[in-house]
Image (cartoon, rainbow, N blue to C red; front, top):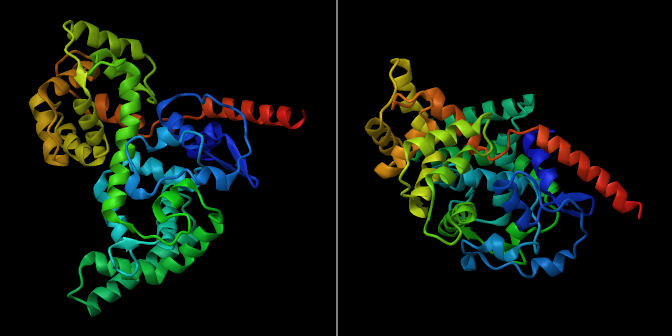
Length: 372
């Protein structure tokens, strides 16, 4: 199993018709905690709990917290939600346009299932020969169309090519893997599945989900206050990373920032928005790295703005430097920052040992409960 599938199985607590599902509460725990709170499998009355799902226009940044155990999330949807938490919004606009097959600026249920299938394939990275052949076919179709329809925009051509080369096959696979309604499908397309999703509603859902997860992490440490300490900010950043001696990083913060000012939620959120654009920022960092140059605080802030359009406060940049400047030269190297943050971005998706241990435990628990 992939690390994502291991983590999904680790945090899932619902089994329905032989398939494992997460509840909204399970999903929140999977991206904010190291271990699940509940390790038992429960049966569920699907129609009853889906009846509590609000329409997409009623969505808020407390959707998952309000639903808690009243809902189910399939594995494909879990991967899709992870993408929302870890990818820049611009990529979803492109994907949304690509699979708006009829070009009406809306996505229906069938088109959305195809979109999810694309993200599943990208996450699992199977690299099957058939997929490579389909990609080559897509390129040929796009090239052919671009010669015939010069006036069409690039994404119109790509969407048309994608529809011809991939849509039918992927739609069939998606529908085979999603025979029952889930919380996400009911939220987006209604209980009858006939509603259509606009990008504005979809964008609002993405923004609300990112805000909800960040609020949960922030409130865990703020204890009702408007800020968290710089040390707690460091603790949050270093979760789910391969850093072995976290205490040395925390010591850096305590020694370098003796007068605590605190990190506001706006600063906290702006950092994670920047983190979702890490690949673009990494290009700028690599240029310094190739030139054998480290990067100072002013250069760091400028590189973030150029690569992502985000302006981080001077205090936030200063705090980041004090966390990751392990050799105390007031410079930030590619290795010190990018390598660690790439792990953090995956929110535990690269971990194996913990997942294996708890998956084994859950398997034993399930057998024990079945024997009672």
